Image 1 (cartoon, helix red, strand yellow):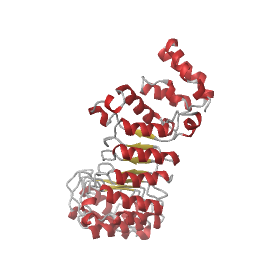
Image 2 (cartoon, rainbow, N blue to C red):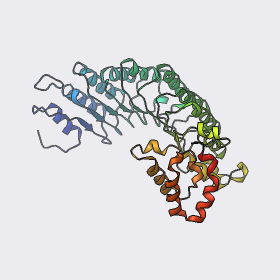
Image 3 (tube, rainbow, N blue to C red):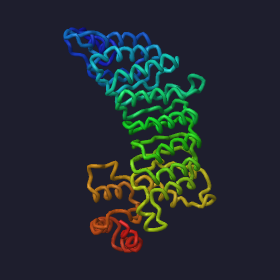
Image 4 (tube, helix red, strand yellow):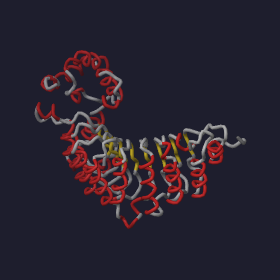
Length: 385
């Protein structure tokens, strides 16, 4: 093999077409200004036959072409190459085409997706970030949901789907949510719809998906416009969901009003029964941001301290799910170290058999005097566990 710079397209093409039968399992050519001609060259190399008659592309597990200038023409060539190795069963598990222009022609894009899902049953991770999907085909986004349903039809295993920064808006999200309700998407666990101008109508459609207790574990909606009404819709949906682990609502114009709705969903202290039946599975993330930060806290009936308290409760709610290898007490200790201002009343729903060790840990950090006041808050709520 000639002496080529590692990581360039010529390097990978040389590997794929080399008679040494040592094709790469991973191809990572990001931010290198690749064009459609480069994508076509790569596609031809993927179809190259090795000495044992198998196609080299059939062994490829990861393909990352993020941040290039590939349009739907180049994307179709890549997917045709993946489809061309279908006789050998494509081993592809991850495809990253983020920040390209793969939807420049909607028909080519749709056919490429059809080939991809039909030929790559092992595909688990698909990233189409920043391809302006919502600006294609006159805004008719029903097609997106229909294409994704092919994954289920062909027995696919798609686990993560990143559609962030694609100008999807409410209409596209509603179509996507309807497809998820019909096809169920049993394998999909992570969906990123950040930066997509999603409003209340889109939030309502996604809340219905959450309420149906689907297999979805991570729903990322950063930098949209769901607002307090959208937060209330998600709060209601969480009452019947025990699978969602992360709901990211940072930078959505949500104020303390919406945060209170979400807080009640995960930590309702109006009665012992409501405390027990609250959602103890999901963590709701704001990354320290709330629209009230620029408003008058008193005007919305919430002090800054109360706002921070709600943010902490929402963030810490499902810590055990995020650290599955840790036993209960270390989880609690870790949480306390992450947020030194935590009051132990936030942990009323812990198993009471762990109470002695919890109190010893807290006493060592805050002192006996403060521990006394913390214990005054705990007895009845602890009985609920």
